[in-house]
Image (cartoon, rainbow, N blue to C red):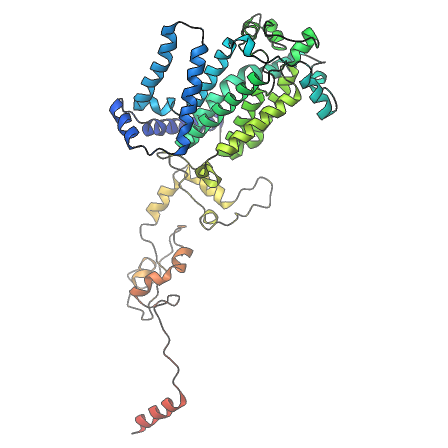
Length: 463
């Protein structure tokens, strides 16, 4: 397979998945359709989560320091998006993510008198007690531009881009329930993390490097930490400006960067198992990057990862467990060829040589070259060997393809379909009505006569 084929085939598959995904969308723009669905909806206890979302959103909008017109337009626009079926199928599942973003950016407007005092000593002390050393401090002692780039890519770029990539792939290749699961798990995980950071504010390692262990207050502005070296490398000030104006300065624990990376790894490995080692490798690099760039302690990373694992398995629905996790969505057909080992749930034997593939893999590759269509043309006349009559007619129909008009046998066509189906043999009782079958249940042996019956029969014949 050349490079062009290796690139074209995945692109064609993505294109076909995109067309199928667009076809599955509800394209209605009528609010009456949404209202009818709302009337027919059977409310359950789990729907009470919407009351929590509305209550929390109302609180953040109340403390948000913005013009009244802006504060009013946010819920109005969101309500309009929910009324239109075409947009509601995106905005309703994304409600937890929008609530997380609203909580994060509105948290800076909480009055100072209601905010707990930030902790400076607790996290480094816990790290030393739990892990025997200040691991995050050790990782920051040696820096290099190459290491800076390696840490910046997942921490400063991947953290903001990969959630959209995960959502896109789930939307294309998995059922819509998987996308709803992603929105809920990712949104509620980040929302919970923000609430913990507000109730339990802690200083990051960059604070210890700049101010030491002196008490912190909310007048201190955020710092880009190691990302300042990235700004210097690219002659920019993007990260310095962003972190200096961060609404949540003392949000070290738990690390939402580590939580997001763990959640992404769990999702991709669950719905695309072949990528497991790669996505967890990415998560490991991001764990290191959070400490190398002086934004988190090791205990923050562990806390964020535990938060992600908790929400993933807590919200994972039953219909997305097991083999259902890799099932394609409606409108996107799965691979049509199934080997005999897959049909009967048997382990496919492997070749002895290194790199040798089983017959199933070869047949799956052959499908790409339309050999299945060729096989269909060759096997227009198939032979059924699951039925044999005890009386051989002049020219049995089951052997017609094998006998010429002059009575001599003709060569057998080379087709892999001229093989008895094991399933047909097993279900042979279905053919009992058609005639005698040596393996069916329709044939019964006559009972063995007793000695008296046998003598009686001989006497009758003699007379």
